[in-house]
Length: 258
Image 1: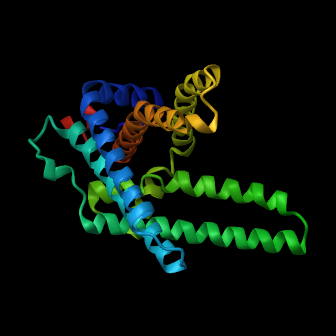
Image 2 (image 1 turned 90 degrees about the vertical axis):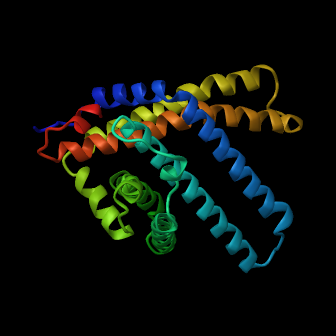
């Protein structure tokens, strides 16, 4: 049976998944933050170096850690969605090194693409003097490509796809639902802003925005992260699943769960 993609059903399903697994997702988010902070501490205070090679190594280490943590969170969400159909262990939510490598490759490709855009932007500004117009077109192009390719990470963890395959698959599932997918991500941005506003208001209200209270600001950021990150990631994974099934002619129990 054809399963059309619905924005309302996607958000409702994401909320249900979050509500049923809130504690697990929060605990894993806290653990991810602790791991990332430990790596950041290691880079800043132990692995010290001002030369370009040292800086490059630090950036690559951070990319690998972020990729691994992000992929593991996606695998956790998929596992929680499917847990009614099979038993799982902690090992099942850990991504492979191949998955991490594929994710890092895509991140590097997008980094190169942005660098090319910036280089062209500089040339256009110097030769034609229309830098602002090109910057706007550049931002639109980057936003479009990012939205079309956002689900490549999902295919990496769900299908173990390589970088090229995952990008193709992501472009394919968003082909007929681009504006609905855009609406989902606008909703995500609204959710993040709604949660951020009271945090900023409280910081300014109590005068905690001064440099001596930087630790308060950092704690506020962690709070905002823990309140928004799990829900945002769940929305992305549920959107991915529903987009996949909207392209399939199937009628089974799994499709009905998402």
